[in-house]
Length: 108
Length: 123
Image (cartoon, rainbow over all chains, first blue to last red; front, side, top):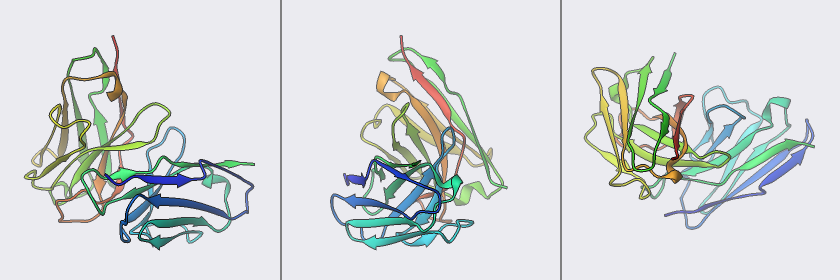
């Protein structure tokens, strides 16, 4: 089973700042890495698929990069609605599909 | 508009059973693989099970294999998850999720999610 480790666990930033979230895989997942956003009390929302492709309707301030074992989600300038928990997910080796433990982006 | 509406959650004793349902609308249900993903209270996401569009292929996490059974009725646009031999660690919100890619039997990744149904396993 591929283990995804997200860091940091919590990121404290102000609106307008740049957020950089990391996801590291226990072995290569090629480019088959996804990012989701989850707000309190809501279902997750797909942001990025296959490392760098924005899902439909996702603003351009969200971008993904990386391949192999190291991936990054960047939010170029945080909007108030971006404060949430972010999860990565791999689909390269499965079952099972696996998720990271999440990074909470909170208001500083 | 794509909609996924889960139902069937509730309080059940350890060792008990439940059947979850997910009613889908707004897309050609039989063309898409579907999955269940759960989230224990205050915890992260865990993929539980997936099924191909025709229902011929099913996949399970080791934590539920042999206890949970996933099926679908494409004539009713409904996904089902039968939960047997429930344990306290199965307590979670269970989300129904649609695979984004059309025509594949694998779960891949999820562009639409329901709002979830809460399963609580406790005596």
